[in-house]
Each structure stands twice: as C-alpha cells, then as structure tokens.
Length: 370
Image 1 (cartoon, rainbow, N blue to C red):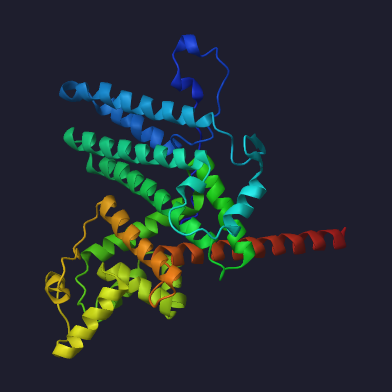
Image 2: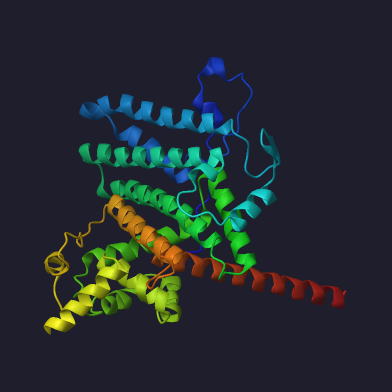
C-alpha cells in the first residue's frame, strides 16, 4: 500500500462568511468539508473558468456555498466523540459503541442511528453530487484530461465512504469477529460519522476502484470460473494487500462465493441456477448477453465504470447477503467489500501491535543499558 497518506484538513470557517459576519464566534463543523487536495481542485477549476466558460462560476460558487452551509447546520448537533446530555439521557462515545455492538435489530436501522450520522450521510451525498457536477463542468470547458481524472477519482473516493458506512455496520454486528475487532470497527464508524472522512477507506478505495475497472473489462464465461482466474492474474498487478487477500482468503467458501457475485454481477442463487441449467443442457459456458434468456428474467450483467453502477451493484449484493444471513440459508453472508476491508483492518491492527512491541522492546533495552 502507498505509504504517502492523504492528510485531512478542515476548511477555515472564515471562508464561509463575509467580512461583517467574521466577528461571530468561530464554529467548528467537525465535518471535513474539503481535504486540502479537494480544495486545490476547486480553486484550480475556478481559475480555469474564464472567457466563454466564466458563466459557470456563479452556479459553481453557489453549489460550494450551499455545501458549506449544510456542514455548519450539522455542526449544531452534539459531537459523537464527546459526552452529550440529550433529552433521552446522557450519551458517551463508549455507550454509543456499546449500543452498536449489542444491537440485534434487523432491517433498516436509520431511525436508531444518531441524527448527526444520518445528516452527515446526506452531506456526503451532496458533496458527491457536487464533485460529479465539477467533473461535468471541467469536461464542458475542455480542460486537461488529467485534471478531470483527478476530480473523477475524488468523486469515486466519496462513493467508497458511503460504502464503508454500510460495511462497518455489517461487520460490527458480526459475532464471528473478535470483540476487539468489532470495537475497533465501531470507533472507526464514529470517526467517519463525525468527520465524514476515513483514512482506512482513503487508502483502500483506489484498490477497489482498480479491481472494479478490471472487472468491467473482463468478459467472464458464465458457468465456469473463467473470468475469475483472469481477475486473479490482474490482481497480482494491482496492490500488495489485494493480492495478499486473494492468496490467503479466496479459498474460503464465503469469500469465493462473494467473488463470484462481484465478478458475474448476478446473485449466488442465479449463479447456482445457471450452472445447474448449463450442466443439464451440456453447455460448457455462455456469454453475458445470453444470461437473461437462460434464467428467464431480465438481469443486468453489463457494467460501466460509473460510480453509480458500482454502488448499485454493491447495494444489491449487500441486501442479498443480509437476507441470507437473517434466514440462515446458503450463499455468501457478506460482500466481497466486507471481506476485504475486514482483512485490511486486521493487517493494520497486527502491524500496530508489532510496532508497539518493537517500541516496548526498544524502551526496555534503553533502560537496561542506562
């Protein structure tokens, strides 16, 4: 994994107000409105919108201002990282983590989540749409394709933050994980809710984006695992942690089944039915365009690199996995993203523990030689 971490910086609140308003008490939004890199992209786009494209500046500035105002509104809700005396009682980060871990509620938990978490998700969607609009403006202005790609990649990273929230909630409730891991995940979720940024996902999202791009370019043969072997070969060229994940985890049944769903774009149940049909008919494999006719229903197996396609495919796999787990029926009970993010966080925790032990050993040696 790239050791160059992306540093998150909060936006200067004075930028949100005109001169007459700057005497007001400074507000800490808690939410990272823009990272330093994102601010640079916005400023560069503004500088580029001249001449016939200057009319795009006003709507662009209004969109940015609206986003900042939304962040300020959310700031009025109590921090999730501090003790808060609420109408329903006192809440602390520890009590919030405990409630997340001990919850056994099924279905949509929106009404059980803190208001700041729900509102922050809306902020992130608005920010995602804003950057999607910036990309369209940059394309219309015929700007440098490399600059447009940078904006696109930032949009994708925001989509992965939305995905991460789902993944964290899934894993927190997974009793097969250790309590230490679940508490670590719950703390990561609180930090994501508070700041709408996550260093783990910032590191992971380029990997998942690369895997998704590879998946869109493959033409898997349904009924075989042809395609999967191609993806595995490509995997070894993508990222050390991803290739390590493939090497150590793909042999597990759940991971293998989740990989098939990710690659083929249809459910485990549809894959199982399709394999059975092809065996009965003595057909080795079929192409994507033949899947719907064999299954007797219209299924979407073609995908694009559009982030909305990615999230839609992910959400279908997520909902199916949750249903199987709830009903205790065969098939993957987690998504491929669940498995991978859990794997990376385990690696990070192991590295932290080793670093701590090395530090303790070094300190002991220093004291012994003093």
